[in-house]
Image (cartoon, rainbow over all chains, first blue to last red; front, top):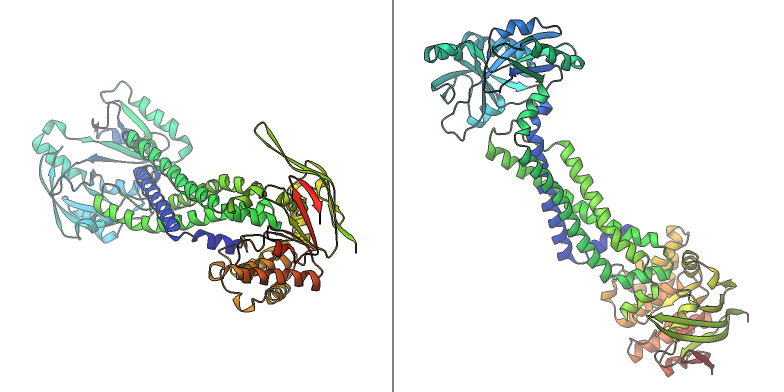
Length: 384
Length: 225
């Protein structure tokens, strides 16, 4: 009976119920979208491996380190393998076509990043071609590239026109792996640098090393930095996640604003629902009085009102989540490769559902308390 | 006949800001089992307040109300709710049916407070609706029924739990003469055939005329008739 009453009362005022459900749905989809943006911002941190550390110039990431450091890093206790990369920063046709490009040492890089999987024959083709490139699957899909295509890039840091031949595509072995990176040979970059700026050859942007025990990461990082202390290029070594987080914190004001907005949205859902529930409960005062007159206990009225609020919020949440998927997919298409991965996470879905249910219950509690403890005589008098 | 309702020195005073309003003044009244009593009196005389005390909806300021051997003033709100569900059937002036429930479901509502199987519930609901002459309106919602039909559903709801007492507050006040007559006939019939004790508040001398006993309230004081 209680379920029957809840279900029928929800749609007693159809327009009001539909508007409330739509309001909740829009709020839930906004919440889901914003949380997805925040998650996407942290995706690099999430994708980090606990057994990888990054060494960069202590002054700033913009300053390079000598290639000669590689051997020293490799001889550091607990370090298993070392690779390096340079940020290229080239433009593909239009500055709006943003994607990450790194000049890498091909063999060691893909050893250090086993989550980037390349077919063996494509890897062989890449190793043989000095101007070859390996690109992420998503990036290739975005620009319609295939193996064998020539991709022209205009250098911004390393000026000039650069042509690369795609020799292979990589896929991420795990969901958080970034499939939007463009890799090419560091040696190719260094040769071109030697032609333009002979004094700047033999420099790498940063080193990435694997270590045998993540628990020793702090000690290993400290050991590396002490080793290069008082040298011409002092280093700053940190775990890969800390390195990635340093990029995220550059946008901390935006992320914090988004976090606040996502919680404001929760408050809006609560106001929308609470308003509906207060109005509904007030209109039905005499009915609650009759129910109490017949002998029902206050708990029955609590269940009726909170149940109705929960049903409204659940329907809104369901609709909201359904519309979040096309919104997120549309946004992902629009921003292209800006975010390596832009998917609604399970955590976001769970957070949206829990938030809506909590808000649904809270919105119903106030009118439920009032109705459950209503004086029967006063309630019956409202009718007459 | 045994006494089913025993009221001793019942007084009720309401407080509105600093003002004190004594609605009932030392009421003493006994009602025998199976009686049909009409409470009459002008507006504000306290008849509805007295009815609410008998039905366990309100508590006295002083005095005792004993119904079916239970002293209501000794019960808390939860106990009173349980007691009402077992002993009292209610008929209101404006029917007070749940608009989202069908006639069948409205009659079923108080049965959810009694431990019955679905089949037993169904049997009782059909019997009650048959007794009020609405077997063909079971699936109708209140807004699909006339005022008289709605009041008959309300009567079915009042009798379905087989209570000892039926309290009716102006049961014909919102009905035309013909429908009012049908409702009064039903009440007389349930009083006679089912032995229900009925306490009815009414302004209408014609309706009061159908009761065995008429009592008049005036300014909170009871005068027998």
